[in-house]
Length: 370
Image 1: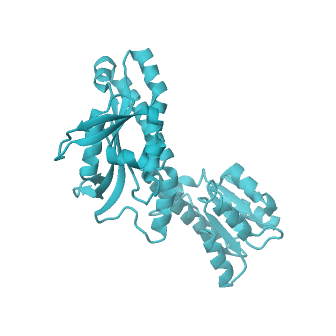
Image 2 (image 1 turned 135 degrees about the horizontal axis):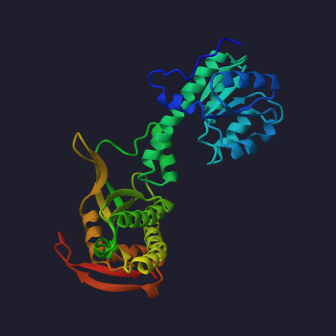
Image 3 (image 1 turned 45 degrees about the vertical axis):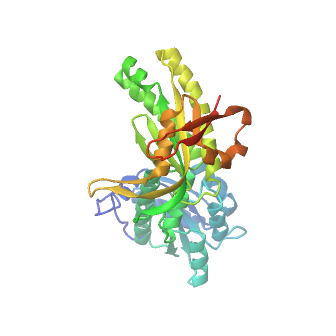
């Protein structure tokens, strides 16, 4: 074996990989046990203390699910179950598809490499494996994984994990879900607000107020993510959620309605606990609207926010202000589109309301969620 590269030396641009060496779990699947043993020895010398392996490719998927390694070293040509078979199974499993795989191959043909790339392989190593090259490939793969996880974490602050994966996939394929230029789109907007919040701030300690808000927003964002809504704005005790953006959702209305139901239903036990512990009466009021909105990055060179603006957003905000605790208000036009999703006994015509910015009063329907 050649003298191994010391991966623990700080190298420019590699802080993510360097910090992950000691804790990174490397898994190897190869039918040559001797190669597994040599690789384990080298990796230990290079600072990788966590290593699992199997020479039985038929047990690889079960081990992947059990161990969840940070990187996989995968042989291609193995009896019964090949490396391509394993890559295909990983791509089909949401729990495994994000694990980077470095393919070990003695094949020079382009077809094998192309097939592995199409199945999600991250990199290739030529057999017999050169230790110094393995060190560099592992370092680069861990750094790339760290960057991808950072991107996924950033996106997941705004959209659901499933939608995050879809967006990252679109970007990888050359698309731009979060476009740099503003655009108009037909969207469904849901505004939610915590009723009785002023009473909370007046009667409860500062730290407790923050904890209560965190609990409240957790309920809202969990419901939004469950139905793949995009969280655009969190201000005070209000939350703005959009559907059919940044990616098309043909069932955006249904998703918004289910989100509204879940928000109110899931917050009910939280509200009951607050009433018992702090003596405050709370609930969630929701306004919903559908229509054209402008979507884009708004701000300055110091701060930018990807957001939605326009009459649709303003109308949803006005309806939210009118909504009582545990009530959803929506325009008559929107209700006509989703009435099949609503139990009729819980729907009432609230009347026609003058809304700021509207020349004529708007027909409003009230949906009460028990």
